[in-house]
Length: 451
Ligand code: ACO
Picture 1 (tube, helix red, strand yellow):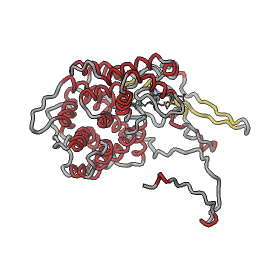
Picture 2: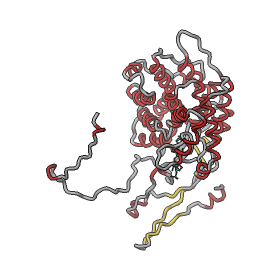
Picture 3: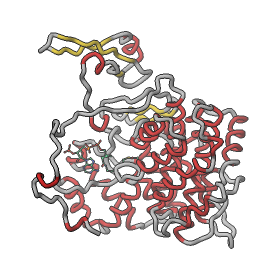
Picture 4: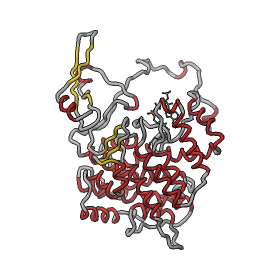
C-alpha cells in the first residue's frame, strides 16, 4: 500500500453489522507507516459482547512496534527501516544490536562505547558454574539455556527493576553479552572440557567461536571467514517481528516479570521444531534421508496428510514468496564450504538436490513453500563443526537482541497492558458434581502411562 493511499485512510472506520438485531459497531482503522493497516477491535467486547477468533494470530496485530518490518509477499525484512541484505553486507552484529535497542545506527563514538559496554558484561557470576554441574552431561543445551538464563535473575538483582530505565538497559546489555558465554559453557560441559572464559579483545562472533572451540592447552586462532559467517547468522536471526518466541517474551513481560525470566520463556518457545528447532531438525532430516535416491520418498511423505512429517527448512508463516534471510545464508554457505575446502559433503548434496526438487514440485509451488533461513543455516553451522543440538542455541544468542529490544519497547509503551487473550469456550455447560461411586466405570488410563 503506498503512502498516498495511507493518508486517504485517515480516520476511516469499518462497520460491523448485526443484521438480526439491527445493530452496528464502528471499528476504527489505524494506519501504520508501511504494511497492512489494522482494525481497532479493543472496544468490541465492551460494545457488543463479542470476541474475535483467530487461532495462531494469523490476522491479529498484538502490539504496535517500530523495530522490524516484514512484507511476506515481497520477501522484505527491515530493521528500523534498514534492509536485512544491506545490513548483512555492510554492518556487523554489534551495530545491529545497537540499532534494534536504540532505534538508530551508532556513530563511531557510540559504537565504541557500546561494544566496550557489552564486552564488560561477557563473564557470568562464578557461582553459576555450579548450576551446570546439576545437569546431566547429555542434557539438551537448550534445556540448560532455559535454566541458566532464568537463573540470571537470581544473581543480577541490580537489573531486575523493570520500572527503572537504567536497570532495563543494564539487563539488556547483560543478556546480549552473556548469552554466548552461557551457550558455550553448555557445550563445554556436555563434552567434559574446561570452560573457556571470554576474551574481550575479540569481536562478539570471534569470541563465541573461541569459547566454543578453544582449549586451554593450545593457541586458538579464529578463522575470519567463519567468524564473518557467524556474524551474518547472528544478524539474520536478530529479530523477526512478533514471531512465537518474541510474542512469548512480550506476554511473559506483560505481567511485569523480570527481563531474565522473560528471555528464558522466549528460549523455551524457540526450542520447538516448528520455530528455532528447525535448523537442528533440517540436519536430522538430511541424515535420516541419507541418500539422494530416497529424496522422492520423503517428498511424498511430506505431502501425505496422514503423515505428520514435514520437510524441515521449508515454508514460513509470513514469507510466501521467499525468505530474504535464506538468500544471504545460501551465499554464506558457499563461502564457508569453499573456505573449509568442503566439496563433496553428502548432506549438502542431499540438501541441494532436495531444494531443487521441492522448488519444482507443484505441491510446494502451489502452497508457496520455499526454503527458509534454517535450511541453509544448518549447513553452515554443521560445516563450522557446531554439534546439531547447539544450532538452536546459536539462534537464541542472535535473537536475544531482538527479544530484549521488543521487551523494552513493550515496557515503554504507554498502552501496554497485561496480555490476556480470551477464548471460544466449547466445553460442557454446568454439570452437577457426582460422588465417585455414582460415576460411570470407564477408565481412561493406558498401561503405557505407567513408568
Ligand atoms: N512440508 C510439507 N508441507 C508443508 C510444510 C512443509 N515444510 N509446511 C507447510 N506445509 C503445508 C501444510 O501441510 C499445509 O497444507 P494444507 O493447506 O493442505 O493443510 C500448508 O502447507 C500450509 O501450512 P501451515 O502449517 O498452515 O502453515 P503455517 O504458516 O501454519 O506454518 C511453518 C508455517 C510452521 C513454518 C510450516 O511451514 C512448517 O512446519 N515448516 C517446517 C518447519 C520449519 O522449517 N520451521 C522454521 C520456520 S522459520 C523460523 O522459525 C526461523
